[in-house]
Length: 108
Image (cartoon, rainbow, N blue to C red):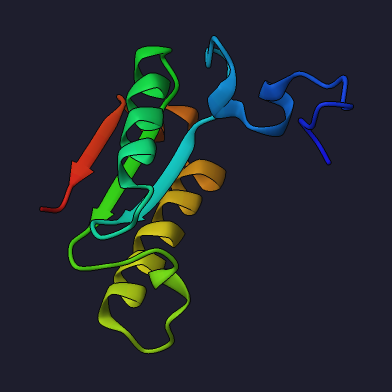
């Protein structure tokens, strides 16, 4: 198991959130439901990325729980997919400046 007692790999290889510095990580899209048990960890990680100068786009979806993005036909799922596809289009088809400044969209 990566990161276990017998694993010599540093924790940050298993989870970038465990790294002391997040500088140099690629632009990041994050999506979390407002009812997700991990929302605080996601927001904290987004803030750390922004503070390290990493372009970050963090979306928080009101009323959504962990795994909401896999519920077929739900309006919040469709909104997430639209946001995700737009972010990927900017990342892969726009100039690097298309990511702009670090932004955090709090939907509640």
